[in-house]
Length: 529
Image 1 (cartoon, rainbow, N blue to C red):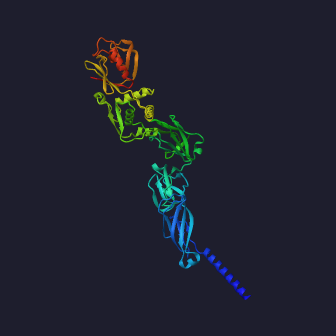
Image 2: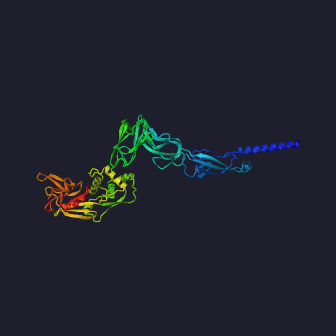
């Protein structure tokens, strides 16, 4: 009996000791992670917990993230994104004297999410003279304003000044801001913030600013102090002149118009008519505005010359210094304002000196004017030599489509000294030289260079003689008008080579018939002594 008691007692002691050992294991202090106001996390090691021997951090995708444990703080060694979920694995070495009971090492895993900070407001009303500030829902340590390089704040703060006061040019404005809660985080995509003077009525910020140059394919942005729905209702603004494109709402306060195709048109004056009047932010007084206006820049004369050369309308070719990558409409529209670098080369070795003398790079000249008229005639436009949006559209459309004029280049020069003659040059060779008649002293053929503006195989020519009488000559053949009523044409005369006309250049029938196909609209005619 006594032996049985001793056995039971021993068993109970063993059970109690084992239970106490298990309790000690579970109750022994463990390492844990706590939040930190600057590091990724803070390692907390209660008494007798031991010491950290290894730290491993991995991303949600399983990639290793290098970190460094300094003191109790865990610092990333690479930039991390805000809101990124990480797994932190700690290995802790326990005190040697306790290892026999609680284990020599413990490995614990924790989930950590990198902190985020969000703007509390993107449309601000600021009292005149007050600093412009942005507020976040948590303190931020890293900021960037207006695309400037990121800078670390001396201490994290929830309200950050943009570095300007609401006065003068900064009474209203728009900028992009980006901020991160920790200095080791990468900045998120910037967010646009707009501020307005504190007023009790709706205000409007526009980009580009009114009166500024508007890029041909540029976006118009209207940002209201109130929501678009509250300020404009369901109506959209109207763009004039009518432009292909669409309005879209970027956010509750912002409307944007993005043109498509050929954009607003080079040189156009663009206006936007609002459904209701609004106050332009920063404008003096309380007057309301409904019409907004911008100017699209004219196309560059240099780019015009480049396109005319590329498309075969000039006696010169153009070669880009580097690949300009102009296969798209957007690229061509941008190049029309800011032309790429390159050089012009005469296409024909024996180009007449008279023609070479007309050429000026980057400036309007008779060669360009004649080529523009040729483009207008080719595309069914009014032939006036004026380089408007339609001419640019025709040139850019042909450039994108890879179209090129293949009729060659002609030039006519007429010697007014005796014996008078007409010379036809085409694609590097003299095609014809024929005696001709110019105007009599009382009605001389004007000196200078003129593009052909009308080209008819036969017609009636009429006008006033030097003595005041009138003439009407039907059935005149092979007419190319180049200066008012002056034209190259066939005429029946007993002789040629002396002044006999009333300002025209008269040719024998056979010579006129041969010249006419080479003198389409835009062909240059030079009258010289």
